[in-house]
Length: 73
Image 1: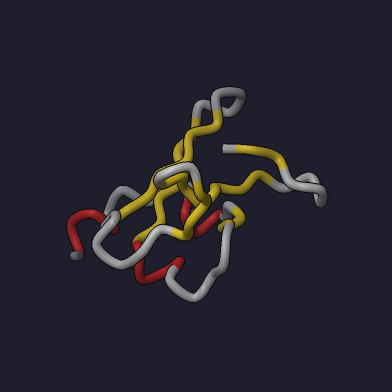
Image 2 (image 1 turned 90 degrees about the vertical axis):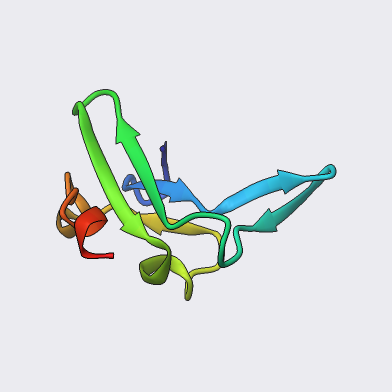
């Protein structure tokens, strides 16, 4: 997890494949979790929540320790 220009933490939705950056595609992950070491907190997002975003997802209170999302799928 990184800190963006606005000061809010975000999770990158981009990976490297064969030396090129690409956006994760459907099937690459079901859930993505960002961990904040300083707050000892995890932020949980499903692929469906992020599929409309181009490269990052900003953490939110709704995603904080939202482990119940794993059971709803």
